[in-house]
Amino acid sequence: MRVLGIESSCDETGIAIYDEELGLLSHALYSQVKLHADYGGVVPELASRDHVRKIVPLIREALATADTRIEDLDGIAYTKGPGLIGALLVGACVGRSLAFAWNKPAVGVHHMEGHLLAPMLEDDAPEFPFVALLVSGGHSMLVDVQGIGRYQVLGESIDDAAGEAFDKTAKLMGLDYPGGPRLSKLAAQGHAADYKFPRPMTDRPGLDFSFSGLKTFAANTIAAEPDDEQTRANIARAFEEAVVDTLAIKCRRALELTGYQRLVIAGGVSANQRLRTSLAELMQKRHGRVFYPRGEFCTDNGAMIAYAGLQRLKAGATEDLAVKAQPRWPL
Ligand code: KG4
Ligand code: ZN
Image (cartoon, rainbow, N blue to C red):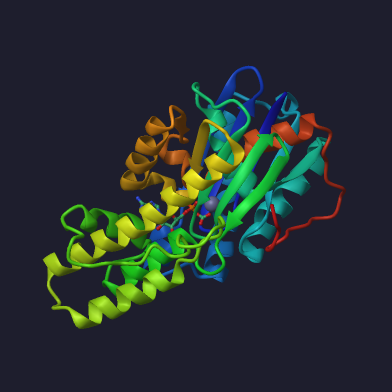
């Protein structure tokens, strides 16, 4: 079975071809980061228009690179939600229409299922079951993953997502969008000892997160301290350590609860080096293992949607002829 995957839920147009036997045959990505940088965040209408411009050329490119003809395809998968409605509709319209025109089955994929299955694209893929920590710009959640389609959400953010907290705090520090990686780079030059950031919601049982208080704490600290590079680096470091510690504490609890030995981290924030190191140490202590997607598949991409879509099609899922997108969609 061979599937074309389409991702367009936010500011990345991602297209990929995944083959059940041969693996990932091609993937093409266009990031709109530069387009949105001047505005300090994603402008939904600009995002939709840019997806319209890029999506068909990228599909052509992915098919050519994979040496795949239309008749070689067994289905088309696209991100159906959650995400920006206009951006999602571009992928859903193109995916559903091509499937109709080419007489193939179509399947709508949950964006977060794509992220949590992304480590399956690697040679060294985790076996089921595992705990997944999904940390992106839109979501922070811990999921008990028992198999394809068997997901139980153990906890999630009650306010800002981890990536959102990174981005908003970075903005307070005058760093450009997307701020997460920039804040992390600045933090590498700082030391945390001067500031005692809280570890939100770790003093009570449960697996939910709350990150908006950390952003407020950072805002107050920035306002009270001198405005120089080293101070900012120190605050960035203290903020990053607080986010990472909080995530690690909740991961440990989720592993204790499920008894699993495998942890998967995915979503944009899984690119964070301090988080990776911290979770690797946690799993070493627990005699378990941590799995991540390769760097380029931590953030949004078409490969994870092609993979998840193929699994869904194999399980018999298909869309009817209506073009549907779900900006809000629980996992
Ligand atoms: O998964 P993703 O590409 O898009 C969403 O579905 O949201 O995640 C993007 C998020 C942004 O908030 C970005 O700042 C954050 O991931 N991010 C990072 C790092 N790289 C990306 N946050 C902290 N450290 C990083 N190295
Ligand atoms: Zn994402």
